[in-house]
Length: 435
Ligand code: ATP
Ligand code: MG
Image (cartoon, rainbow, N blue to C red):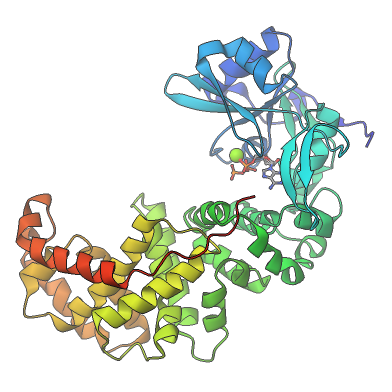
C-alpha cells in the first residue's frame, strides 16, 4: 500500500528525549550513526503521548538482525524463530531491536496457515511496509531519532485524541491472522482508558473460539498481562462483555453462565483485590489467579457443593482434571499447578484442623490459603467465623507463620502431601502438536 505518512515535527508533539531511557537512546543513536534508520515504535510512543510511563521501549530499524549484530557485536544476540529479533545489552538492560517487516506473501520466510493465521513472519521490509502489519492504529506511530518527528500513516494521532482503539485494515481478517489481537484490544482499552468502537468490538463474540488455536504458552503469558497489570477487574468485565472469557477460561465461563454462580460473585472481588495489591506494590502469584478462576469448575467436576467436606484425595483427583483441561488453553507449568492445589488443599486444613494451629500455620501456603478462605466467605458467610479464628491465631502467634527453619517441624506433613499429590497425578495427556 502506498500512502504518504503525516509527519509531526518535534515542535508539534510532546515527546522529549528526557522521557526516553538512556540505554535506548544510545542504541537509537548508534544505529543512526551507522547509517541505518532507527525509530521508537508502538506502545512506548503511544504511552508517552498519553502521558504514561512506557513499560518498555521497542526499537525498529531497517537493519536486518544480522546487521544489528554487526553494529553491536558482543552486546547483541539474535533470538526468536516465529519472529527473529536482536537483543542489545546496555548495562544490565536488554533492549529489543526489530527489523521492519513487509506484508508481501510471495517472498521470504512468512507462513500463513489455512485458517488465515500467521505462523511465521520474517520477511524484512521498509517502514512504508512495516506499518500495515501492526495491530491497532495507536500502536503504529514511529518516533524518528534523526529529527525527533513522529510518523503517522493511519490517523493514530486522531484516534489517540478521540480515545479509540481501531484496527489497521479489515478487523475480522486482522483478528483471524492473530486471534490474540482480540484480547490485546481489551487489555489496551483497560490499560489506557480507551474505547472499543463498534467496528473493533462487534466481531469479537463470533471469533472468540479462534483463541483455541493460539499457542497455549502464549495465551498463558497473555493472561498474566491481562490480569496482573493493575486493571484486572476492568479486563474481566470487558472480556465477558465481548464474549472472550470462554476463549481463555472455558470451564470458568461455563460456570459463570449458571444461575447463582460462585465465580460471578467472587471473581470480581478477588480481581479487585489483585488490583489493589498491584497498586500498593505487593506481590501477586499467578497460581492464586488460577485457584480463583478454577475453583467453581473444581466443584462442578466433583459434582458437589462447595460447602461439603471432601477428602484430600477426591479434591486432588478433580484438581488434576480441571487443571489439565485449563492447561490446554493456557499452558500451566507444574509449579503453578502445584501452587493451585496447595491453596485448595489448604482449605480442608483450615476448615478441619483448628486443633493443630501451630502445624497448619507453619505450612508455606498458609497465608495464600487463608486469603483464599476469606474470599470464599464472600459467598458462604458462615466461613467468616473460621476466617476470624485464623486471623486471631496469626495476631496471637505471628512467629508460627512459615519460616524456612520450621520446615523440619512440618516435614512429615509435607511428605504426606507430596505423596497424596503423586498418587493422584494423572498419566500424561497427549500434547497438542507443536507448530
Ligand atoms: P505494552 O508493551 O504496553 O503491553 P505494546 O503496544 O508495546 O504494549 P508489545 O506487545 O510490546 O505491545 O508490542 C509492540 C508493538 O508491536 C505493538 O505496539 C504493535 O505495533 C506490534 N504488535 C505487537 N503484537 C502484535 C500483534 N499481535 N499483531 C500486530 N502487531 C503487533
Ligand atoms: Mg511494548
